Image (cartoon, rainbow, N blue to C red):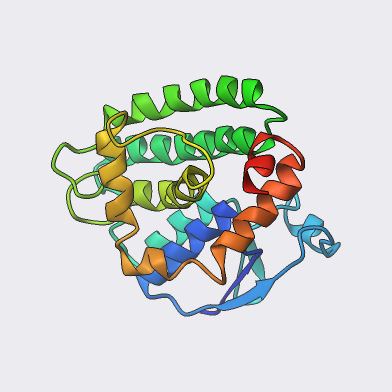
Length: 222
């Protein structure tokens, strides 16, 4: 089976698939695209024209990172999702929630001023506060010591929070102790570290410039 991942480096959802591919030991080729100049064929295989895309055997193309990661896990007989139907459904729900949190985080980068930033941050922290109550007390990962699809789904967000924290405070370890510990444990995983390509500080600055040029975060960076 041949796998081709189509993506661009700044995409957090593509980063999920890179982590899953690495963890599952899947061989694959990479095709980088320019998000500002997408090839027309992308819209023929994906209704949104978004990455990541996974081309299988040069024929079938899957879109949506959650679907791609679950397919990779199933085809490799991996253990990233629970076998119990109820636990599996709960994990899927948290993967979707990770996407909601990622979108809320994007609102922080786009905030035009400090007042709007703080408004968006309040909603973002409400989401993380809810999540804090679900994280395993002992960890080190979301549940125990085994990497799961939930860890993979939140890993890109944790990386971006870490870089935003260098610019302006989002939360402290005292505010969210379990999430702080969990995010550190996630980023100790070799497959997670291997999902970062290039200088992410530069990538993050580029994303901030494109999402919120002359906004609150962008001004803090300059």
